[in-house]
Length: 357
Ligand SMILES: C[S@@+](CC[C@H](N)C(=O)[O-])C[C@H]1O[C@@H](n2cnc3c(N)ncnc32)[C@H](O)[C@@H]1O
Image 1 (cartoon, protein in one colour):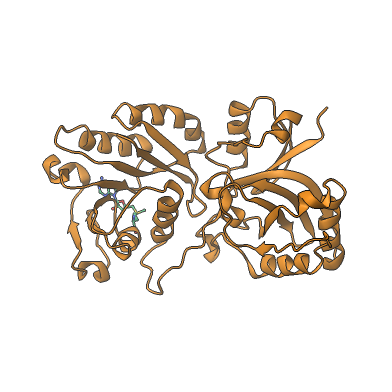
Image 2: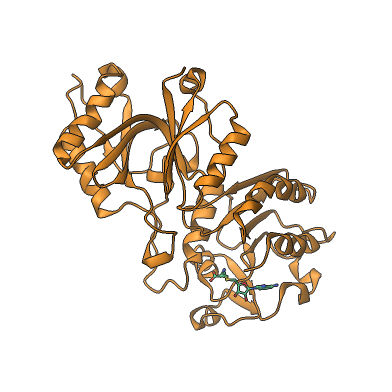
């Protein structure tokens, strides 16, 4: 029996979805432990040795190889336990190859509830500093950064604060955009006058997807009221059209690069979509309605939308099992690369990005 474990961090409430996704994609993994927003799985030895292993689960915010946990009320002792768990497994020259320390707390609420947003809490930052103070001697200069974004291929030490007195230890290789971010959450600078949380979602989606969205690009969003995502796109210098029967924040209405089409998407002339390079849809409707609406637009011969960013509301989490079907449908419109992720700033929804038409 393997003694290797993987930890997975997710949105609170998505644990069962992560479990079934992992069972579907990695049938050899065995579920071991879970708390809200945090799970572990026993994994085969060869997975633990695979430098290129990727979890590829849409509902996993981030993941790493788990070295277990320590429980206690003495922070100094827990920090020493953290290092002990590495020192007893890895020679110092291996340890010295780690460039980053990521320390974060598991989510306490669904993002957006009780004014909670995922990210590095003051408690996690303080614990990170405590761990750094106890960094062992490795006989060579070894500088670790705390909670900074890693670069692809960097090795990262992880400490997940599951409870203030229960710390889980692990590590990962940053092999994708989201595993470069501490706790799988991007550090988004929001403006003081942020119109809605959708600002955070689209910023995260753009960074995660690495779509080549540039200043001057024409971007249309269906379901744009009150206007947070359009605000983020305007901040990036895009020329933005928002389609929504509801009111848009006056801040956007007075912006020279913003146009509001006050209508439902289906009432907008199909030809009006010809000039757009990117299309986002963030309407509070069932996934089927979103896909029907977008299909009717992008399958028009004169419409050449290069990339789609779609919020699929999971009115029922069981809809997560249909993601492969949604992907297949989007690919049938000519988008060869379709990816889904429950973004850190999503609520009960996933973000789907389609490109490569
Ligand atoms: C979650 S809000 C969108 C938030 C928005 N993206 C922002 O940045 O603030 C959902 C919006 O979808 C709009 N909506 C629902 N069905 C629609 C449709 N068929 N066409 C256009 N907008 C629609 C609603 O009026 C509502 O304002």
